[in-house]
Image (cartoon, rainbow, N blue to C red; front, side, top):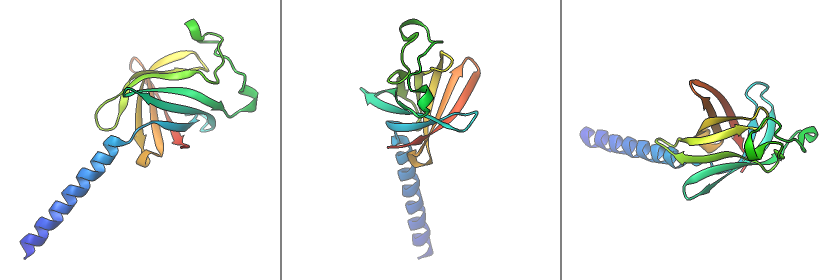
Length: 148
């Protein structure tokens, strides 16, 4: 009888582990996110991440500081130079990787015009999004909060 109970318990634990790992793998960054500045810890904007053919992109949906509503990307290069930040696509070509991580795309910081390789990792049951931008061996992390 004890062997049966141990076996039953092990089966239950294994199933629970499988379900929790599957849930993590299925979390998606798609939705509306409040961006949080990694230096000041202040909310800056809302970015809407969408998915098309399993590729993510993200657009600035709104800017929270009324004084920056009409901001333009002065430091950007090419077609984005001097364009409005509001409505700008700042995340491009992000693809699913292993273990619920999304990467291999780019993110633009419109405040400095720099483009980073990006990795998006949903955390805290999808309520938080770790946004890691890389340039070479250097990286920046931000933790965005899900709005919807």
